[in-house]
Image (cartoon, rainbow over all chains, first blue to last red; front, top):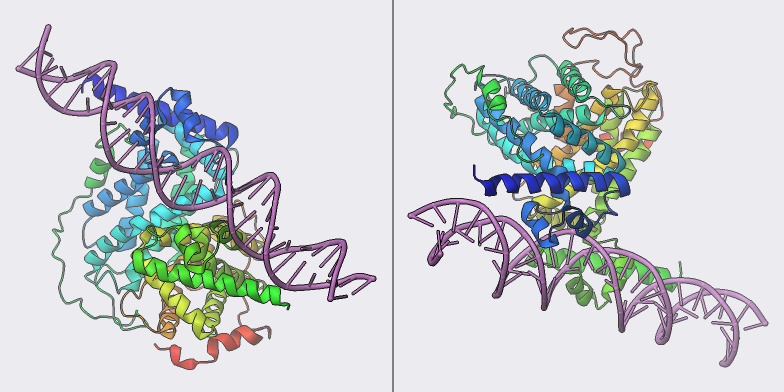
Length: 248
Length: 248
DNA sequence: GTAATCTATGTCAGTCGGTGACATATGACA
DNA sequence: TGTCATATGTCACCGACTGACATAGATTAC
């Protein structure tokens, strides 16, 4: 890790922190890239070399979360019910937040306040989720041995899971100064969502014929043959693997 | 309705149609506002007097859908289980689509193809939903007699309902030349989602404290009294008028 | 009919987000 | 030290979008 690398990390965080503070002071929309760049004393052009745009400052954390989810999902046993696997993925994100440094925790809290003041941003956040959701659907559909494009059940499972995470994040609106409180509420929300579902509603195998109101079982004869190694500890590994947080 | 008004409507539709065709021809991002304005022989400035931006062209239909949902929701009996009311609201949107003129149907189909080619747009669509979702949560929470800000269950109900609609819209990806086909699949998706939920999972009354998610037979001392009121008038017609959609 | 009025539109200038091209300075390394 | 890679700055540019102002066309009043 040369001097160059460290400086890059430093400036990146400097940009992020300056931007976060500016957003809190004068609002997201009213803050220009030039102002942010000026605060860190860099060229506006350089700003765009660290972040793809203003949005990236605020949505970067989210990329990290999705990455954790995908990793966790892949590490879950293949014969596990899909929503259960997704719940684990959600909890892995929560666990990662707990492990974050004080600086990252502070950034996350600031971020939350910014989101609260700018509904458009939470919209953008959801938009990012929706875009990456497709990958998760593919993963889930592969586990269930169905065609990811046509199987609505896989879509619903993933969509519900992501909705659950979003609700968990959004819900505690007031007086949240502690990150653990947020994580706690998120876990509660996950449990609440799990309780809403009919037991055995998400079978690990292909669609049971009685379930799907539409044509149910087209091309699901091929079982995906994932190694069903029992890697329950893999989630922890995936989460703990690197303590330094990439984007935020 | 003077000549002036009619011309406004005409130019608005002209802009929309020209834009839709351009988007299909050369892609959404590659199409500039100047091109659209040029195609309709309109000043670029005038374009922004009809639409707030390029996004508006593609997300406008969605506003209409949300409006229908809110109206329908308000017209449902207050003691109806929330998700049931939301299902009716969803079906009302579907019914509205069926009633659309051939021109509107054509526009909708074009819109779908555009969405399929631009994942970012479906993201934006979801973003709009998320922004307006708050109003729906307020409505649901009021019905359930709980605080809209702190009650996660209301959030989850709405989020699940909106996810269901989105999945219903997105799912049929290929060879969809008929709007009724889309509507049909959307109805199926709604039914599928309803089937995933635990029976009596969304009581009309407020949250009972100490409700155990793992318990399969929750509180619910106050029975929701389904299908009692006679207010179902138009909306019920909307759902039942073609029984062909109800396939097991 | 004409005149007064209202408004939809066009023109212009400007801001902001974002990108490519090119030159330069600074760290990495022999 | 000198060479090389790369991080940065400068400049020019595009596209989305907005405010200010003038004008042409429709509407109304007389």
